[in-house]
Each structure stands twice: as structure tokens, then as C-alpha cells.
Image 1 (tube, one colour):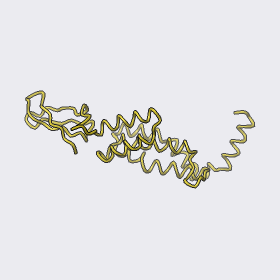
Image 2: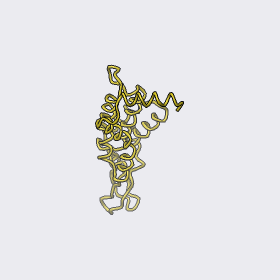
Image 3: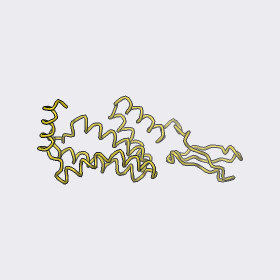
Image 4: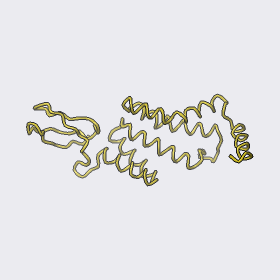
Length: 177
């Protein structure tokens, strides 16, 4: 973990700020004054988890998913329990999967394949994000993945099948919907 020396604004004592705790505080060992570490961006010219998250979010804004995934991965090397990085990886993976029509590496498609691909993204990235996130953020994440979980459950219960999806698609095209 990278450390940055700092001076306490209250007593002038020397403190160190741990850049891994992005949203936490550091306390002066002499007077106990708390200091927010949110402003730590680089230490000795090296990027911190915070600067990597900012760059990853910027890459996502410009649809540079590969760069964003790489940056989120770097954040996890610094801070393995960073819910923002796990969630960013989930969003990236879902975007890639949707772009390729939820097809597997062999080009197979269909409800079962889509459900399996969606479940893999949830398991690899979304569920760790929820696990590490504060309760209020975890609740927002759960709301955002509810539709994917319902789809997977529908496929697993046989409520959603390729045949039913094909019939519904045909009906929609006939009705002009």
C-alpha cells in the first residue's frame, strides 16, 4: 500500500494517509484529528486507486470498454474489495456481452446461452460489488441487476424459451410493434 506523508492541520504533527481507503479518514496519532483522504490522487507520480477509477469512468463515457476493464482490474490489484471497480467490471462485461448478442465463444445464441452468460457476469463481478459495497449502494446495485436475475430465473424455470421468444417476436412483427 502506498503511503503519503501529511501534516495535521490542527497540531502540525506528521501523519500518513493510506490511499487504499478511498472514502475513509486518517487520524493524527498526536491529537486525534480526522483527515479525509479523498484528495489523494497520485503518490510519487504513481496512480492511486482513486485516479484509476476516475480514468476508468472516463473511458466508459467514451465507450472504450477495453481500457476501462484494464483500469478497473488495476484498481482491484491495489484494493481487492473496491466495490466501484467490481461494479465497473460488471457494467463493462454486460456491455460487451450485449454488443455480441449474448453469444458464446462458439457463436451459439438463445435463451439458455444468454442466461448462462448473464449469470457468469453477475457471479464474477456484480455479486462481489454488492458484497463489498455499503448497504445503501448494495441496494442500488441489487435493483439494477433485478431484471437480469428475473430473466435467468425465467429461463431456468422454463418460462422463457427460444420457442416462446420466437413466437412472441413473430407476433410483434405481425402486429407492427
